[in-house]
Image (cartoon, rainbow, N blue to C red; front, side, top):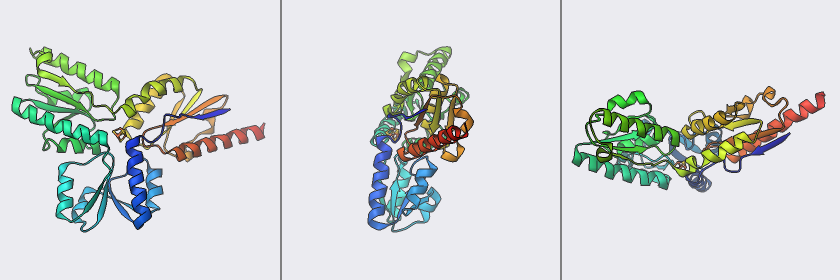
Length: 298
Ligand code: SF4
C-alpha cells in the first residue's frame, strides 16, 4: 500500500506566521491570550494550549486589562482595537497580510458605495471571524450573502460592490456573480454600469483546488484531514469528493475506519490550510498500522 501526503496541503503562510508569533511569545513568557481559536483545528489548538496559550472570546476581552493578546490570521474589526486601547491591552497582531489588504479594499469600497447610494456585499459566512472583521470595516452595514436565498437582502436597482471572504470556492464566487448580474438585468438595470465584482479569494486556497483534483484522481482512497470549523476545509474536501467518491473527512486519527482501505493500493492524505503536517504524518502512521494488522491476520 502506498500512503502519500499531499505536498501542497497543510498550513498556508498566514497560519504559519500566526503560529510562529504565538510560539515565540510562549517560549519567552510561557503564557499568551489568543482571541478565538488560533486555527480551526482542535488538535493544533490543544498543542499550543499545553504550551500556555489561553483562548478567550470577545466578551472576555472586554473584561481583560493590562495583558498581551494575539490576533489570529482571520483579522479583527476596528472595535477590537478600540477595546484593546481602552483596556491597556498589548496586541500581537498576526492578521494575515492578505486579509488586511482585503479589509482596506472593503473600507474604500464601502466609502464609494456610501457616495453612490449603493450596497457592499460580502460573499461569506455570517459570523465567521474573517467576515466579522470585514463587516466591521463598514460599520456593520455590509450585506453578507452565503447562499442564493440571501440574495433577497439586496436591492438590485442600486449599485453593488461584491467582495469575497478569502476562503470561499472559485465556483461559488463565479455562481454568485452570475446570479447577481441576472437579477440586475431582471430589475431593468445594466450590470456593466452598476455592478463591480471583486475576486478577493486567497490564492493559497483557490490554487490548491486544481492540484487537489489531480491528487484525488490519482489515489484509490482520500483521507481529508481538517477541523470541522474550517471553511476552506469544507471547500477543499468537496473538491476531493467530486473527483473521488472514496474521500473521507476526518479531524483526528481516532476517526479512521480500517474498512476504507480494503483492496486499496494508493491512499492519499491531504488537508486544509489549517491542518498541521504533524497531524497528517500521524494519520499516515495510523494507516500503516492498519496495513500491518491486515498483513499479520492473513
Ligand atoms: S488562507 Fe490565505 S488569507 Fe487565509 S490566512 Fe491563509 S494565506 Fe491568509
